Amino acid sequence: MTASYATDPENARGRLYPEEESYFRSPFQRDRDRIIHASAFRRLKHKTQVFIEHEGDYFRTRLTHSIEVAQVARTIAGTLGLNVELTEAVALAHDLGHTPFGHTGEEALDELMQPYGGFDHNAQALRIVTSLERHYAEWDGLNLTWETLEGIAKHNGPVTGDIPYALAAYNARHDLELHTHASAEAQVAALADDIAYNNHDLHDGLRAELFSTDDLAELPILSDCFARVDAKYPGLNYYRRRHEALRRFFGVLVEDVITVTQRNLSDLNPATVHDIRHAGRMMVQFSPELWTDLKVIRKFLFDRMYRAPAVVEMRVVVTQMINDLFPFFMENSDELPKQWRKDVADAPDQITLARIVADYIAGMTDRFAIQEHKRLIGGEVIPAGVIDGN
Image 1 (cartoon, rainbow, N blue to C red):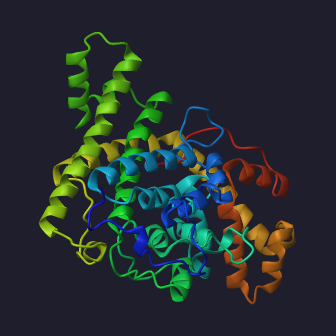
Image 2 (cartoon, rainbow, N blue to C red):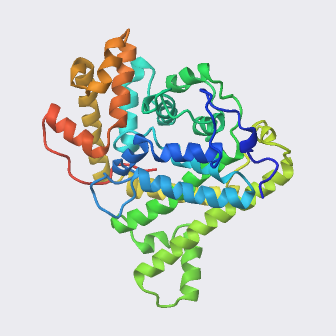
Image 3 (cartoon, rainbow, N blue to C red):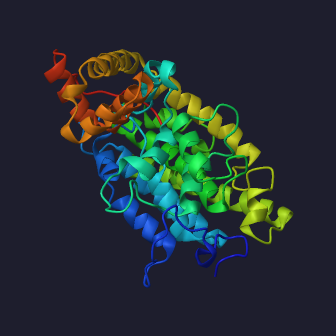
């Protein structure tokens, strides 16, 4: 049973382009399905989460990360009485705007785009689902509901100050009320992202032997998780022991969010989703105590995984690749695929051209960016390695 403050699909605000709704799928189920079938969603399979995509078959990619986020988000949303389909749609779409090579690629592209309005992966996700996916006969984009678009734009909180151009341009056509908080469903998707990557980055770092099980057992939260496993399963196999401890770590994060959010909702006593949007603060949160411990773990990951010496070296290599590709396409736009050339021909100025080039590069997978750099610029294919985090 859904709560009164859940987003009601029967009262959804509709789509930018009106269309007849499905008689067997809710509007948010339909949004989720369109996201799953999008080209950008498939490309996440070959985009960096922490390790360059071809490093190994067991490491997370942006696709498997997004699936894990959706799983966590569904669990939390269902427990809180929220709309599970909307939560899942936002969770699956939250990383669609990522460049090749994760945040390293984003930082490089943002620097190159500073004269043209910058680059932001959250805003780019909205640009993808409202413009760049061009498969339907009657509109560009996926024509998602207002609620799903709001969740993509605002899942991390209100958007104020300098609004990224990709978000501002769409918002001028279809007001997403950027000054307010998003629905509780979108807030759940945001916290599920934090839970998923903090958990699976520890898994992947262990597999890559960037740190040891003993290192983890000294960290807050995890030390208690290992102690509970050792008490219940003395002498457990090394690999099973660490898996059992990380399972418990995962559970601690999920249970903390549920407990704190239930308390926040009880204090606010919202009657509708409108009350959630205008609460003036996030309803879906970690407890201050857990957040303090989690910051220690995040610093550990930053020092031992995201910014290890070999990682820093790899970041320099992939940053140079983006730095080479962007000016090349600006000067040689005829090298863009045929379906991009009409946009180039219609571009009235360098700002528009730069945004087209940024769209193209941002949509590349790791492997395609490496291949195109070798074909167009020259040089060897980069070695496998860790380059990024979260």
